[in-house]
Image (cartoon, rainbow, N blue to C red; front, side):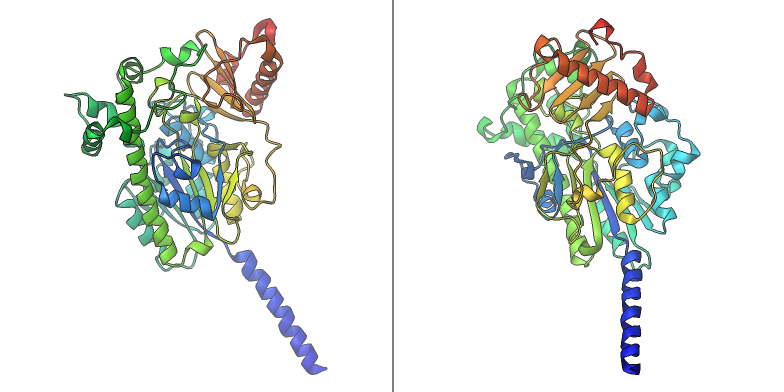
Length: 462
């Protein structure tokens, strides 16, 4: 009887201890961000003009979402959302030049501070481009490393492999393929360029045309394109999109696209070095890895370069999650609508067992990634900028602009994935148009988007 009682006590203690260990086991978290990287710039996404070996391995090991969108398709606003889980316009930011209004509540509940407050060791490496109130050294990060290219993987690995009692949270923010911004300078004699891109341009120009990517299928200008798009293209930026749209030849576009592919492969190799370090030091099994980008690049679609537009190439980004033994591998989710700026923060908090702030509009994607929850109840995601608003539902994309004619666009993404036909003026789609107008009004109220109220008026047609 005593032996039985002793065995029972050992068993119960073992169960109790197992429960304590299981509940206290928190994953390491690695967030990888690239810059100006659209969703189709992955060989895993079927792009035959580049080879992204490291990101393909991540897709094979985890889940890849094909419908992920940024909250604003330009650097600082998008990164502000990734850091806070808030639409950047609610913080006063619609472009890279605007000053943010960051309250103490928002700052204390930003990613770095949340993880630091949960006893994670924290690291931020690479590109920042955030308001000064959220500079990494003041936003909860123990180690801040400025390198954005080749030196970043080594610095991040050095941090991750250090002996520690607590798990780590690391952000690796790579600059490329953003250097594509200098492609116009490389083509134009007398303009200040960048050595790497200048060399890539020379290589592209020396290749026979057949060795270059062709123009994209949607290289034409869409029928009934809202005039606000053309009116707001830049002529004096590093990438003068208005000049490029008017002047680039087919060969210029093919050179551009080849350079973009090479820059993407370059950052993929840097990510590969980082992931190899994680694996070689035995950290892969207990580390959640999330990969995304701050926005895309038009990549020649609609004769456009750069970003800050609501076309898929600009506003759509890669989004992948890997956590061996927890997230099933090789899954492609082509149904869920993801807002990376709203969803990253609550998702990372969910995996780490951290309570996120209660004012967030985003979703915790943990259950979706683990195959336990369906996100079909999310009817739409929204992106914004100073020109207007974009609302993406499962089949359609609706855009409303503050000025110009026409002010609205409606595209059937299922039938017209290249976004070549604006259906907003088609009477056959009036019911669909009005439904998306209602969604936008619903979003404006839910997100307190007072900036959009001034131009979200539809007259008697609503």
